Amino acid sequence: MLTVRAPATSANLGSGFDVFGVALSGPADVLRVEKATRTTLTVVGSGSQYIPEDPKKNTVGAVVDELDAPARIRIDKGVRPASGLGSSAASAAGAAVALNELYDRGYSREELVPVAAKGEAVATGEAHKDNVAPSLLGGFTIVADGCVTTMESDLSFVVCLPDVVVSTSNARKVLPDGARLDELVETVGNASTLTAGIARDDPYLVGRGMSDPVITPARASLIDGYETVHNRAVEAGAAGVTVSGSGPGVIAVCPDGLQRRVAAAMVGGFEDCGVDARAYQTGVGEGAQIV
Ligand code: HSE
Image 1 (cartoon, protein in one colour):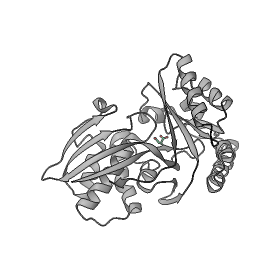
Image 2 (cartoon, protein in one colour):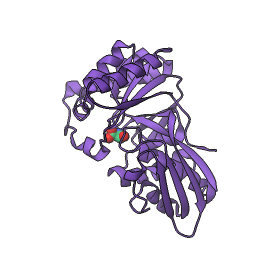
Image 3 (cartoon, helix red, strand yellow):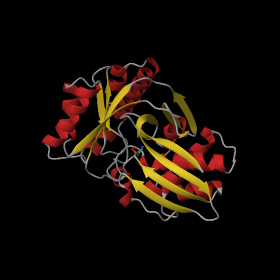
Image 4 (cartoon, helix red, strand yellow):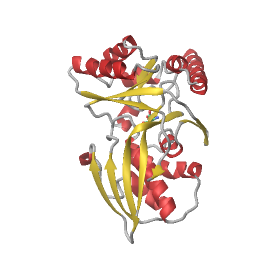
């Protein structure tokens, strides 16, 4: 039997739609996995009532099939589904690490990225890799045209999670079909600024680079209170704020010492809009670990 802790992740960071991702130091899913002749699944924890235990319908079932590795799997969800924190990716990444080890498949972490992405496709309809890559590799990740680049970072974040559900597939339906040239130029500039900020551990550069003119405005319209929460976080000292993944989570990058204040401001912003919320004060974390 193996136990694996697989971290939550935040994808996009505004300007890096389907490209950027960051592993968070918390929350995380914990998977207990043992070899079996047929695959069975038990899911407990945060939002587990919404997650199918039929392996054919669950993100980890596709990973089992990819690795030809049947198993008895228990997932303790620390990452709430439909939160914008890479919940399905955490389970897929954790299963990929556990099964690769138990069955001695010999894949590297990089090679497990497309394996875990098959699981992501079951949950969200598309095999995007910007959540599974950081959940497997840790740090800040850039997924571009099959190439995955990782960078370490010590930045601090607050992720505020409203008590509403937005599925990734629905959040992809509201996106525009294309972008204008000026929007493309702005997005490339912001994404480059953000990457430089990660390299320098500079929250202000990262915060500037989080701005994007195409994806975030469309997604924000699905999150009651987003504008208020964004403004409150900035007033409390956040260096940048954007939608986490496909939402409804909202992520803020914080200068040192301001996390607590920013977290309280974001929760208060949602509550003033009639939405219950909780905040995680978190940082950049490591990839899935066998514990
Ligand atoms: N890049 C994906 C999206 C991530 O924004 O739809 C989903 O968490």
